[in-house]
Length: 193
Image (cartoon, rainbow, N blue to C red):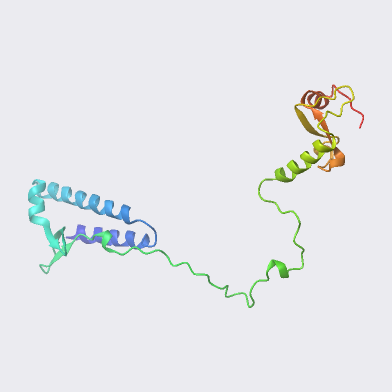
C-alpha cells in the first residue's frame, strides 16, 4: 500500500510538470511500463506467478482494469494512470511589460535613419557578387595584365588587399585570370596599377 502511495505521488508530480508539452505518447508508454514493473514486483513479493498477481490485484477502474491494493480502511487504492491527466498546451499570451509606461517606439519613429543596406546573415557575399559582376563588365571580361589578356577563368582582384586597408570599392578592384592572380598573390608578378 505504501509503495503504491509513494509511486502515485511521483507519477502525479512528473506528469503535472510535463502537462504543458506534447508528451501524450511518452506518458502512455510510461503507464504501461510502470504497471508492468509493479506487477513483477508484486510477483517477487508474494512469490507467485503473474497470472495470480493479476487475478488478485487487478480491478476494474472506470472502463479499464488497473492494479490496486486495499488501504487501511479497506478501500481500493489504484495505481495512478498518467494518461488520465489532460495535457494542454501552455497558453502563449502577449503580455505588456509592466515596467514600461509607454509602448516602445517603432523603428520608423526613431531618430536613427534606416540604412540602405542591412546585413542578412550572409556576410558581404550578396553585395560582393554585384560589385564583382560590375568589375568584370567594366574590364570587358579580360585579364588586365598587359602581357596576358586572357578571357577565361577570371577572378576579381583587390589592388590593395583588405588586410592592408583596402576595400570592395570598384576603384580598388581589377580583373585578373586565375594564373596571373595566383602569381600576383605569391609576389612573382608585379603589376602596375
